[in-house]
Length: 342
Image (cartoon, rainbow, N blue to C red; front, side, top):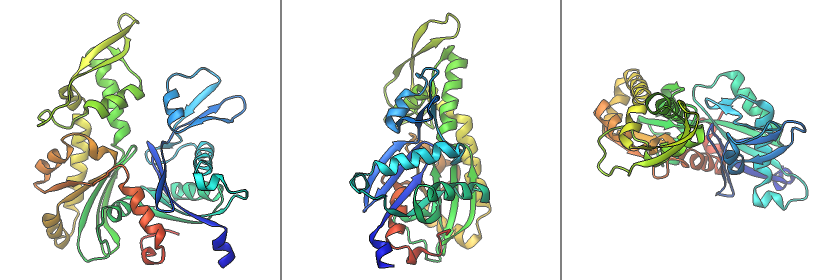
């Protein structure tokens, strides 16, 4: 056993639809977009992560950019395996090793995942030298990452809005009491912006431009205390076919995202309606905790607070909350055995 441990490295992975984050030796060593660019002729990797993300919508016929995860689960098994392998090999400490070490891995998965999808994640991990693979549901990892003691008989509501799914869960006694997983998250918000620009401005923009707009001026409400300045957006005019530019405000972004935000609100209300009364009393005192990239959308916390009449708190670093929680679990696997899926 000692020899096995000597040749084993431990890593925690938040394998997200939009971003992949990896922790090794308590340090965040990978934080990259979940994108891979492959040469169609040789099937070899051209670029991964940020480099591949920049290529999206700009490649010629011989190169294809792939986002191997869709709605929080593996959509392209081969591309996922290549991407995970490339990310792991790029970890500085592992790069220097002559012999590839065995890996003990803890990987986050959405709470609404099926057995088949779970097996796909596990098999991908095993094929990149994962000898011990543990899975953990994202809301539980997020709660641990926020410093919540999930073992207590006390209810906590976590909303983790990622790239592919929004996970809403009530956690108590190291388990998920009730949860709601919806496929309304960052990617849908991006699609909403693309559709809005086509419909309102006859301007055709790509997903990457829409993502940049969402970060720069994205808003869940038309009433912000400190609104961002309008930005200029370039794309193709659908009427003339020529490149064109439009100035867009945060108010337009709020209108573009409104329908999707309403669906998130409805899912939160549904989860609250399924919560046992004793846990509902706890949530009334502690409020709701927001994590994931979607938590950074301006005014979302205030909008959810108005809808639920509860206090809504955003995690200190929402993008890294889940992977930080996964890293804490990795350091003490026996203590968290109840919440791990082996």
